[in-house]
Length: 527
Ligand code: GDP
Image 1: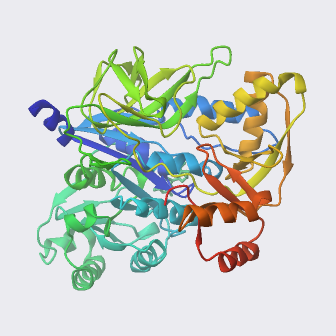
Image 2: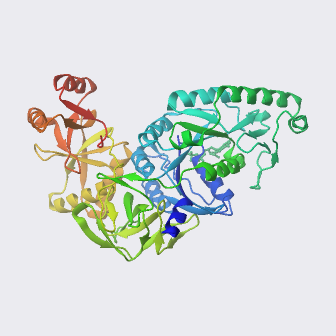
């Protein structure tokens, strides 16, 4: 299958992550501009949710619309097929971002040079580390007075627990920002603020000791740059692509996204070093992209905007083989045969109907409620892909049914919303109480509103005193049974029927760990 191999080799599937406001939306747009995928600025809508008044319903609804169109942006650049996956910036939707990160092969991380490494970036980096996802860092907003570049690099190493290797270096900063020296391609890139054109003013510059440097940036800046470059070459080992691909070192670029500055270099380096689609673990074996049979998994489900037609788009990451429209595929869960005629590919400018897709690609399948997050689809034989763990939610509330006549609708609505990954549901064995767990407060409003609008069910939420939901494993079945029996009041089951211990406090959890040494608690569903 030569064609298949070639298609795989040219795919680059990645996501951009950042703390809100660092410049993710701006960088996304500039990458699309430099990549030739869009012509005008303003085409990429921020997926930010701005919550001002209480219940900004329209905002969330609008957001759902926007995030379908910018969920995946595909474009061609220098012979590569690039798939950029959007990740919601709002921390209440962090789980969505975590899941999206399971569908990418690498990430670009944006850091604000004034603020440095922020909390959301730290959390996202932890998720990247779970799969050793290669990370490229872009330090943004160099047109502002930021922190010392060396200090920023140290902070990345310390807080994100990854080695760094600068591949470009800033000349000045803020008002005195003159440009960057690109160590990767040995070029000098001079800064002009507010530059509208999308070609950088790059000058071949092999040897920074050449006296010409003074002509471009002046004596002082030249001396300082030489000194700093010498320091970099002394302190940081030479860039190793292998280490980057293993997730051990993050190459770092500096720039100013809003000024179109440094973005082109980032993109050019990205297409040269970023990984092509990799093998993936299933519960039984490793699936290699070049295998002829199609496999893929659902990492995101998007409810349609039209509540009257309850169809949804399931986002599938193709992992191996060629995906073809109208072909029968199996779903691992219940081994059901399914066929999809309405298949969407996401290009930067619009959605288009496609007939086939290759590993690394994301396809959108229209579905009436059969597929759920984590489902694996395959052609002839397959088992579930690993890698979509659930994380313990932060906020827990019990679902109170306010309209007994609509119990069936409520059950169905809850199930479908949970399949979409809006929140997690835990059901206590005792008393059949249902607890919804979320990362942020926003989701409760989303759930309440959508249950009413789409399913006609009315619910209220009762806050619960729960610190964490902990998945449990035991040395033996007997140990597990004994634990479950003695703590039954605090044991619930997650969507897959796995046992979860609902801990009320940190101290209490510690006590459990001390008293039941044969039981291990986990904060994610996969261990
Ligand atoms: P996101 O929340 O990470 O998607 O951030 P945005 O892309 O929406 O950017 C947040 C704010 O930072 C916006 O007002 C941008 O115009 C601004 N911004 C982005 N890049 C730069 C930059 O290079 N320099 C400066 N000064 N501001 C920037």
